[in-house]
Length: 322
Image (cartoon, rainbow, N blue to C red; front, side, top):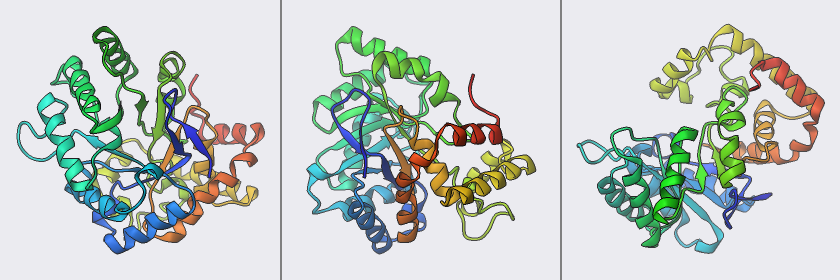
């Protein structure tokens, strides 16, 4: 396993992390989750990511049960706050929800602290100043060691850093955006000044576009699958035309390129993300041990992605940011 520093922070994360979005609670029970996470740890993964909203908190509970007894120094655990449930004060990034939300997450995880705490989405109803001061309070209380954002605009992150400097509080050190060969604008263009000026790290999600880049949806949406089980996700990809003929043709060409390189399409898609030096850790998901083994073998594929291969991928998708 390769370990990468989280931007300019002192902490190091496994280049491939293990995420619990959708699968934990919805597809995996405690026994299956334990098998998958144990295999991931055996292969060197130290970064595990969850959120209060995943399966209405069940994902955090399962994560905590699986990691119980593991030396805390050997793992990096992240959770995210925004969608805490029904009620006017259980959603968003207000001081009230963040303060109460982290207590709920720690209770479900059975931990005294998380290593990374993310603001899961921007909250237009709450002043960024209130959010920054609340996150600073959480970190200073010892309930989180670092804090960051997820899917915030570069302008909002810059404002958060400015406020933190003005008030001499702890600034965000990491952003968690979606990043794959279909979705690359933010990581490869919008966030570049943040990486360079503030040393922000990046833990990216959906490297396989929920399985789309593996070729599993070329013949339609099979049962069971993420797009079959999660209607909102399927609607989002339909809206972006990721399920259309044009994207299918591109995915077919990516699959053919993977065969040339002697790897699976999933490994090629993961290796493509890993090749970006700005990416601190790529979050993967799995419901079977075989998927974990396949995903982690992507580390061996990175060196095969020379400039010629990268140019071919850029030519296939024709979406490289200017």
